[in-house]
Image (cartoon, rainbow, N blue to C red; front, side, top):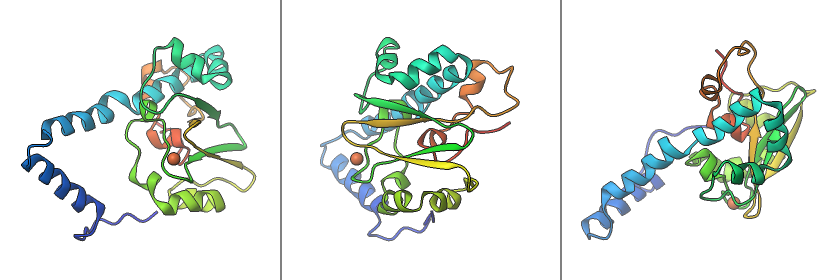
Length: 198
Ligand code: FE
């Protein structure tokens, strides 16, 4: 996916900044509240909540089974709640099977587990192409999967959000849950990347 770093006056970034300036200027919103909200989703909410679940699943087979079986039950028992995770299904990557998540209709995403959705997730290009040619889209995003690997694309909706359980990187046998969680990126839980290696 190409990343355009030049902004025209018509770009969403410029327009949003102009809108924010106007709202602040008119006294309708307080800029620090906007900043706090963004920071909350970037640093407190996600994607570390999702990463913790993945790391625990890697170290605890029983927890992994429960997560794959009934993620809603796990989230409720762990007291994890929040935006857009009323019904979550977790899909595990394994040798020969790779899962990737999209919302073809709009941009449904498990905010409370992953934080802010990346802008490419909401782009019409990703939403339409990942369904038609997932292998090619993933390769363009830096994830090469061999031809034998089966690709499963999960289309989110207002009823169901998905989280990918990436494969545990090799060489991490002695890692603590916290050390493992640090390897679990947002992109790996959307399914467009692997967990980080060492
Ligand atoms: Fe959506």
